[in-house]
Image 1 (tube, rainbow, N blue to C red):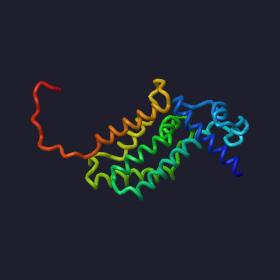
Image 2 (cartoon, rainbow, N blue to C red; image 1 turned 60 degrees about the horizontal axis):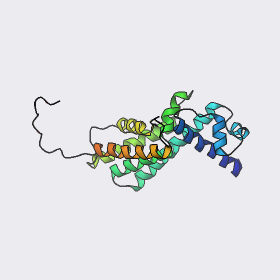
Image 3 (cartoon, rainbow, N blue to C red; image 1 turned 45 degrees about the vertical axis):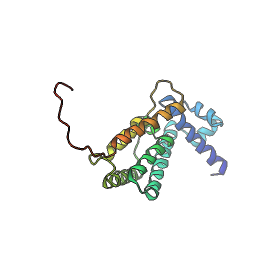
Length: 194
């Protein structure tokens, strides 16, 4: 594939992810082409049907997020810090599009990416728990589903930059709450208060 064709293909994928997050669903293909600055024929050359574009966008977000996490495992020694950086990067990479597109895909299964993602999450959570900085009753699923909730657009009409800023802020609150804390001695229950 020529360099300009590769660039157009990647631009179409990036724009598709942006629009999925903006509209909270599948974007119109003519809107993807228009925002990417290419003709609709260029979009159809790269993605001849709706499924091929949705699969490419989903796979791109997953690969980009997993690769970022794998790099963090190697370079960030603190488990919670690595997990925090990963989750923020995943938000910026558009991981919310995966949750939106998944039900629209005819065959939403990528065994290679599932295996990498499972290993990444297990490694990140296990390291943070072993270091004593993350609650020991957490599972990888808790982290994945928590991130999924923060990554999904709120659908209240906020500008995308404000939406993303709130997601990052709320993600930090969530992670701070998951950090292991010494609870100190048990406090007596106060009757009548629920």
